[in-house]
Length: 447
Ligand SMILES: Cc1cc2nc3c(=O)[nH]c(=O)nc-3n(C[C@H](O)[C@H](O)[C@H](O)COP(=O)(O)O)c2cc1C
Image (spheres, rainbow, N blue to C red):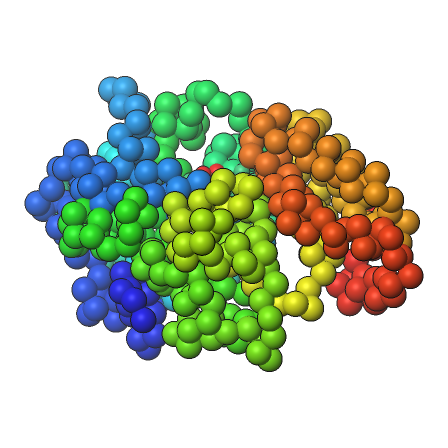
């Protein structure tokens, strides 16, 4: 097992309580930051650490923080993105459920760095019970003097709130999240202005993922340089991966970035191999939006080098032969999997979740779902496969927010790597006997 920075104590009984968390060294980063650091020096430490946002895009956190506008007399906010709706991704839930104080500690330390008097944890509605766990942790933090006025006798005062969303994938997009937090419909905003300039209620705001904010705690405790020594190249530190699908040991794992993908899938310390000793067929490495890769390309790059769990290595080859680390939702598929059915499920999701503001996304996601349904129903043509390709290519880059890309990329990658499977459905509709059973099994209504 590699180094653990976030889940070191996740199995300690009672670690979700303040007393046990504190016994294990909890809240030391707040003490260190408030007593020995300035907001500027803390931002520098985060820059030195090389931490990249864990929400999906991997943008350098320290750099993002340094963009935060600081007009005099104007409030600034930290908003934690706990919407976690990307299919295959459930690592933030695990962290918040198991070690809620780690997130609360990260919120306080990060808010000190940003000069934010208030912060919000925006959590998806389906995680209602996790919101309750967080609210309890926040109450305990207030009761023990880590939140409220003049924390540890310093000038720094801070309030932290939990806001529950209504369960919409689009509200994970940072500007839609801010709209929703303001009580409006969660439609993404046109950027610029970016949240760093005009975010929550028009004030400068940083939006960060749960895991990003939690990672600030070990960075402050051990220093940015020490953190940067962990991992590989520009993929520093550890990463939480939620592994699911046809593996022997699904779950949430913390791994040091740079671990070979093969070791992650097959070693007993992680996924424990493919169920029933079957053959690996494909992997969606970073949540449903990222391009699917066939077994040969997920285990090795097109150059023949071992593929590693890192931003660079997974991205090697661009979208032609590579993919993305994304949100860390690692979905493993064995040789019994139908790529077309899997894609239909994803496409159905994106169509349902499109906010409808932009025509290419609103209409395109619907068309893609319908065409996939037609193919699965045994009525597809080869022209439909080409049409599917054409539609996805007309969504990418033509929408206000990247939900369009999130819907288009899986379609492009599935056709690129598994075109023969689509053609097989079209040419041999007689073989599609299990489709109705599949609908029944998954409680799906044909489009
Ligand atoms: C449709 C859509 C859904 C998203 N959902 C999430 C999410 O659930 N959690 C998250 O942290 N980021 C999500 N993001 C990314 C956020 O917009 C934003 O980049 C992220 O919260 C920034 O945090 P980070 O820099 O710490 O990664 C989503 C983006 C899009 C386009």
